[in-house]
Image 1 (cartoon, rainbow over the protein chains, first blue to last red):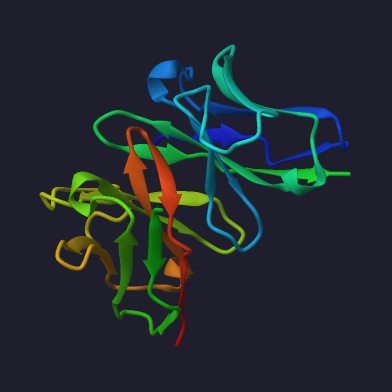
Image 2: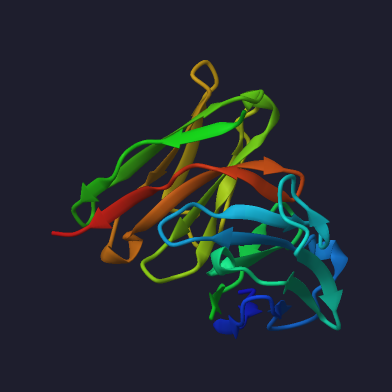
Length: 110
Length: 117
């Protein structure tokens, strides 16, 4: 079974920069996995931030950016704000209309 | 404006089934797939599968294949997810989401399901 790996947690100072990653237990993440990133605040539904690796969804602030770094997908928050404190989930397309989520990363802004 | 509105919280006994609805508005229901995702307490998101709003074609995650059924009512623009043979490990919040290409652009508010005797 495919396992998508994410850091369990990260801490960032207000105004700082943090990069979250999304990897595969076996193999590399590439643009063919169409990585997408979702933000989830406590008790709320997930909200799409980034899709197809690096495309920002409508209305998403430009401090959020996506990329491929080495063999992983990455989400970078530049100039973190207090309301960026959330869980961040990556999702990979595995082909054949199958998707897999990562374990999620809890980001604390302090 | 796209909205997905799910049915309310459920409390079920082990061994029973649960059926959750997801009413869509603001987009052509038949033209898009509806995804189902769940999230256990303190856990991450888990993809369950999808159903096409028009054709009824389905794809289930291997983890749920034998216990889950997705259906739609195209006249009511509503999708349904039924999960059978419930155990305590099925206690979770269940989400529906609209598919756009290879990502999920709009989500329902979530339906908590508690499985307890």
